[in-house]
Amino acid sequence: MEDVTVFRTWEEPIADMALDFLKTAGINAYKVSGPRSVFPFTVDGLAEIEIRVPQKDIERAAEIIAVRFSEKKSPGNEVDDNGET
Image 1 (tube, rainbow, N blue to C red):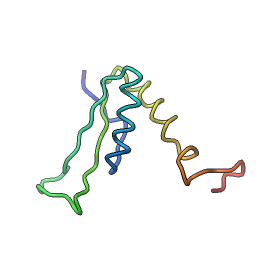
Image 2: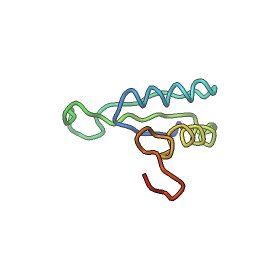
Image 3: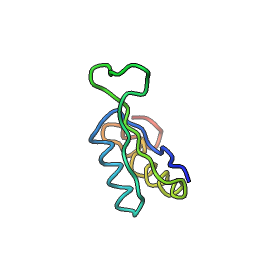
């Protein structure tokens, strides 16, 4: 079975948090990072970080990520009942 990317971010602390949530749930998740182009460098040191899981765990992992990283729960992005921030 092939592993699948369930989350992407540019921020290392966010990637670590997502990884911890998945591992705590018993999902064998891991990070993949680095430049994704033919050039061996990144702009300003930024590289996209992917969180990958085994294909058998994709639904459970996607649910955990969705609950933990929804826009409504993100600090600074609180949404009221009218859908306004």
